[in-house]
Length: 370
Ligand SMILES: Cc1cc2nc3c(=O)[nH]c(=O)nc-3n(C[C@H](O)[C@H](O)[C@H](O)COP(=O)(O)O)c2cc1C
Image (cartoon, rainbow, N blue to C red; front, side, top):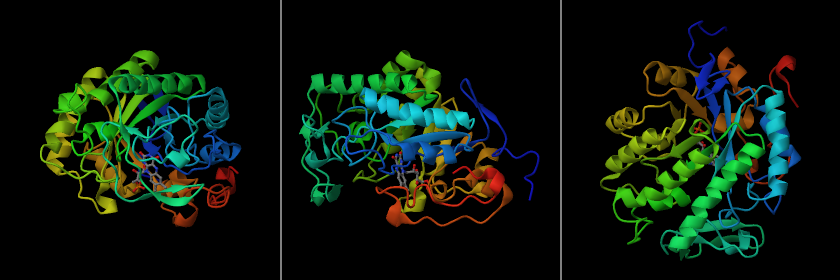
């Protein structure tokens, strides 16, 4: 089936200074295939190159520093070996005419000392522990530790780490960076009042709780250009023990307005309805769109039909798709042709090698890209 000529989803579109092949972004997905010291591997280059038909690839969460690498075998962007590793990946994607942003993710309290390199620490805005457990390579599942509250100097350092990672990203050949302000990681730990009890300039009202995000966004934009910096937020998301609170809608509208003022290239919103969290209420969605004047990427449970509907309704300018990309390297072709999708094997989602990573089939010879 050929798509209707006027399809928005499958037609090229501009994002800042980039021309994208279509309006489908591959959503960031942690796959834990880097080395134990957080260096990207060769198989990651093949994996991302296989998916280069996405209009934009947003990589898995990538640590800006040793303190930010709280999960085992996630990649980093804070040393030369990591820059070199990523360079092979961006080259592989560009050689297939793809575009790729790296998602910068500082895990904050979602971490464990056993996962951290020597000299690194589990830091967060406040010393508030997460319930539950985290995987460690050394000891299996372990309870989350109580993080140490960051000092003012450590906050300054952490902001600088995001900026350095963004500069490293450009040296590694990325087209831009996405600041991970969602899903309960460090930036969101600052935003939410349940994880941020600070009494200084980085706590209190949304002016304080939003300061870390906005400083990271501002200084990163000043360093590499605002048209190369996107931001991901998850209003109403509860992942990593982030409950909904009174005043949340207002807070996120304020953040969207301030990010718009800075001129970041996109705002990436996750609607968690698919995962059982409540959806972002329609009215809040509208207010976020009014507040942020640039393009919105929308993620959460999309297929070709619902993506096209959202674009036509003006609910988003780009559609980010996650899980279906795991098992369908040629997802864009399959969606365009209405072809069946291969189901995901979640047993191989995190960690391991090529199995469940590089061996998902493509449909046709011409689109095969092993
Ligand atoms: C295996 C896996 C890893 C993920 N890792 C990240 C991540 O590193 N950063 C992030 O912002 N979201 C992450 N997500 C969330 C996805 O980006 C996306 O928002 C979510 O899967 C919903 O979109 P979907 O319904 O199209 O899958 C992950 C999701 C999955 C399934």
